[in-house]
Image 1 (spheres, rainbow, N blue to C red):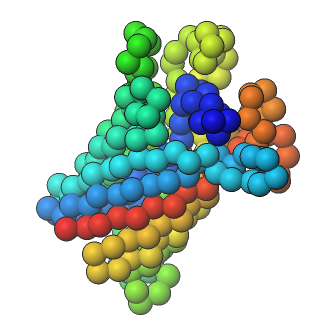
Image 2: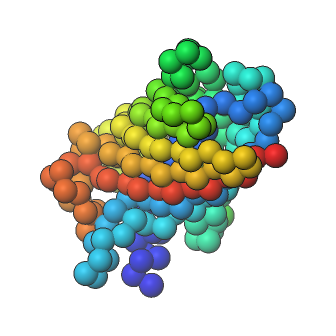
Length: 220
């Protein structure tokens, strides 16, 4: 029960998910993704990521543009509706160097079934990716930019920070129909992490939170 109480608390302060799609899908290509992971915490004698889960559907509109929408399934377990809806737009691609840059603007919507405190958070992801071998596997690095225009945060505390960012690196293994992803984030490295009920594990100090995520996708 302790773990679920911690997860419940985090749903109201910052629910950070992995990158939805770093590379756009092909035109008319579809993908269904399941992700698992979150911020690292000490739980007893172990260090574990909070087990946030989400399901994402994406579809290629053109070879350079993909739309997506998600349902945060862990949030739903606690009576919350949470989704992020957005697009992935290829900004640059060099076929000879096998590199590219993408941008992903999105809107995050959250509300609780028992409260009238719906909130909307704009987000912009920027990623650089590289197909490092003859395979379709690629590594990527980028940053999430998250805006919070609300006046209060969890427990009606005054919101003094309205901009959050998270550098990230990741690797995607691409098979014929299945993709497998691992991602590491450094969430809000400019903010202290010792003011909440959870015992964050951060080997880099008292600022920011480390997040680890795994994902599996099926394209069709």
